[in-house]
Image 1: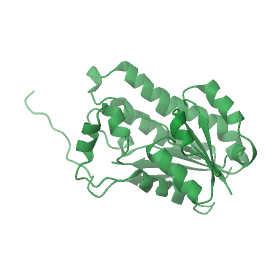
Image 2 (image 1 turned 90 degrees about the vertical axis):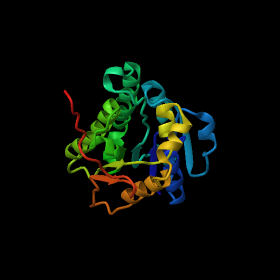
Image 3 (image 1 turned 180 degrees about the vertical axis):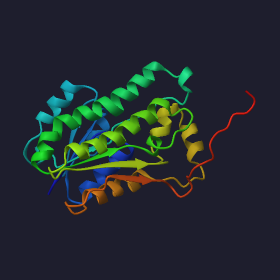
Length: 244
């Protein structure tokens, strides 16, 4: 069976992806920072690696420790990422901006670069987790949305560079998914509960199943981008300021 590596596997979409792929018979390498949560999902089909995706040396040491079927990665799911803060740009924390760029952009391209030679050799695949924020701006999105726009464009440019190799690349772009995401962003579970109340948002399992569907399409078929929203999420009119 093929092997998938999932970053950010300790919660939310990443953890759901580990379960979905393991249940489908894949070998899974699950990575994350929280060792206790990783220990809870270790199993016959799941190997866990504890490291911060921003730490190149720790990442390389962990990946180099893989053996057997778990060492041959056929699919990379770049799921690790975060949003911090909702302040407008002129009031936002520069530290938060840097953390989002380091995690959502720099770490993503670094692990992709590390695994690309093997993915080309095995005619594998890459699924990058972007967001509808890559396409639709909103107040307070500033750097977070920009990082997700980078992920979307990086996915398309990887497709161009990998033309002829057989490697497939997909950008998954969800809207509202109820996970730890908003609680982490705001520092408030109450804010998260309020945001999703009555929306009937998507679940982490919904996105994991979409990833599994993309990964199991015939090898001649590439899903370039897949945008998903709950039915109760849509668009509003352009914002218009009056009075000066």
